[in-house]
Structure formats: structure tokens, C-alpha cells
Image (cartoon, rainbow, N blue to C red; front, top):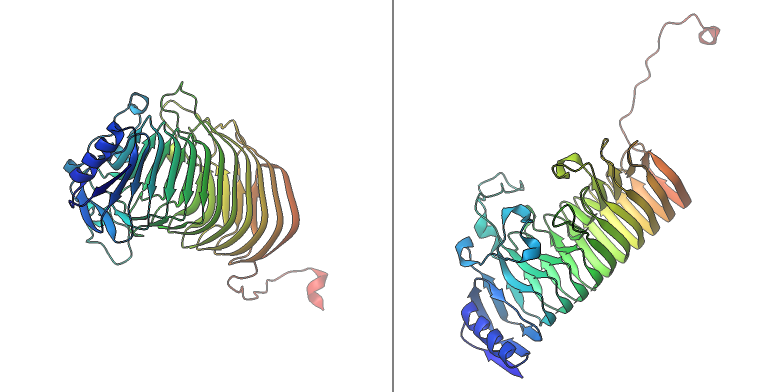
Amino acid sequence: MEYTVSEKNGIAIQKAVDRAAAAGGGKVTLEPGVYPSGTIRLQSNIELHIPAGAVILGHPEPEAYDDFRHPGLDAVSPENSRKCLIACADCENVSITGRGEINGSGLSFFDRNVPEGQPFAKPARPRPRMIQFHKCRSLLFDGVSFVNSPNWTFWLSECEDVRVSRIRISGCKQICNNDGIDIDACRRVTVADSTFSTGDDCLVLRAIRKTPDTPAVCEQVSVTNCLLDSRCQGIRLGCPSDDTIRNCSFSNISFKGSGSGIHCEAPLRYLRKNCTGYLDISDILFENFDIASGLYPVRIGCDPGIRLRSIRKFRFHNFRIRSKRPISLEGSRETILKDIAFSDISGTVDGDSPLSVKYVEHLKLQNFDLTAATGPETPLKRVDSDSWETQF
């Protein structure tokens, strides 16, 4: 059954969702117009349809949002905020569709009095995420634009069977932490035919352990036919205290931005207290990429002293690269990168080295044609010497 919302506010949307859920499910369709809103909670068997001309506009004050509370998330509060605009937990068969927009009013949460182009400082008050789903399955996000998030745009945690298609995520480049989609400990996720433009990471794979003894696995994620633009990273994989990320693929991706294209780094600044490192990431395929990067096209590494379980079995095939810095593969004595393969790689790197490598076991290069031949000229300076060579 279809439920049409004409009253222009989030309370009316919530009432329609609740009516549809009480009847066993249905489609909640917004009429064109702007709907100022705090938190909206979706439920099982609900399709929230936002047609062209309809906008859900997030409230500019954090007090308008509920805290996202769930027993499995009590110990985790990224960016010191539990607030979100669209919330859903322990549900199935939920979708957000249409050609309309969800706007997070992101700029309202920041002091923008900074030099032109500089990032805004993190505010003291909590910033809501736009979309947060936890322990849900059979999800669809199709066609909608997600604009100006003040925090992570999507946080999908411990969800299964998710399809994301034809969406647009657009955020101010000066806003910190406005990630596109954080896919955390999820299974069977597909992201396709979508565009991302963010100040922070466009796509993130995580396996956040909600407590030190709680397993978390992120696997069978497929991303294809997407355009990425980021000041930070196009694709980020894991943090040092995460659990397991495996069997994921990225294909037919174009990255163009001032940040790095692909980034899998385990820095000390992200290491949890009382943890020496835990991440196990393996069997990741990257295929058919066009990267124009202001930093690294690919960066994989681990800070010295951190002991990850593994970073292994990465495959990079058919890359066209234009970047400021080289491909960087820098493990450590404690965490050696293993079984990394590049094939059919071409392009140019500004500087004197196309590839920086430390602590790598079984690095394979096939049809690797990356040029790095720029840098300042060094004037010839002769030195006094008694060598016979200098006598001619």
C-alpha cells in the first residue's frame, strides 16, 4: 500500500512510516517540496520514496536528532556522536528510492571563518550522520542524492544483502569526516553506477570490533562503475584495530581528486588503547582504474611497531595513472606486506620514482610501465681530485 506525505515536515514522514509498518509495510511517497526534519526511523518492509523535487532537509541543530542506541553499538561512537538523520536497526526489506534529495545541512554545523579552501575545524557539538543502518538485511538505496552531510553520509554496520545503485553523494570539500559510504562488518554489498564527491573518504571498508572480544568480518563487497572525487581518499580499507576484511572487489572506477586514489594504511594515530594491531585484510581486487591523484595513486602500509595479522593478496590490474606521488608499498618488520601483484599499469608520476617499496614479500610486476622522470636539475660541481681520471 502507498502512503503519500503532503505535510512538509519530518514528523509527518515518521507518522506515515509508522502507519505503513503497522499495516505490515508499504511505500511512503513524498510530494514535491522541502521537508525540514530531525531523526526519521525506518522499519521493516518500508520503501521511502523521494521523487524529483522532494527534499528531506536535516535540522541545523544537533538537539533535533535522536541518539542511535543499540546494545551492539554502546561502546562505539565515531566522531563522538550517536546522532543521525535516517535511522534503522534490526530490520529487513527496507529501501530509499527516487530522484529526490536528502540534505544534511552540513555547513550549518561548522565555523566557516577560515582561509579560502582550508578545512573547517571540528566543532565541539555533535554532528549527525545522514544514514545509519545496523544489523539490517535486504536493503536498497537507489537514485537518491545525498548532499552536504555534516558527518559520515552512510554508516552501514553489520548489514547483509545491500544494493546501492545510481546514487549521488556530494559534500563540501572543507568538511572533515563527511565520508561517502562506510561499509562496516557487512556481507554481500554491491555499490554500482554512482558518483561521490567528498572532503573525506568516498568509500570505506571497515570491520570495527564493537568490543575487543567481538568478531567483525567485512566480506563480499563489490563496487563497480563509480566516479570518485575526494580531498582525502577515494577508497580506504581498514584501520589497525579492525578485525577481518576479505574477498572484495573494485572495478571500472575513475578517481580524480587532490587526495589519494586507494589507501590501506595502519597508522599509530588510529590504534586503539591496549591494542598492538589486529587487522587481517586479504583477497582484494582492483581492476580497470583511471586515477588522477594529487597524492598517491595507491598507498598500502603499516607504521613500525604495529603487528597486524596480515595485509596480503592484493591484485591491481589495468590502471592508468597520473599522480603527484609514487605507488607506495611500505610495510614494516612487524607487518610485512605479502603477495601484491600489479599488471598492465601505465601512466606518469611527478618526481623521480614510480614505486616506493619496503618490507614486501612476493611483489609481482607484469607490464608495468609507469614513468617518473621529473625533479630539479642539479648543477655540475667539480671537485679537486688526484684521480688519474681527472687528468684527461
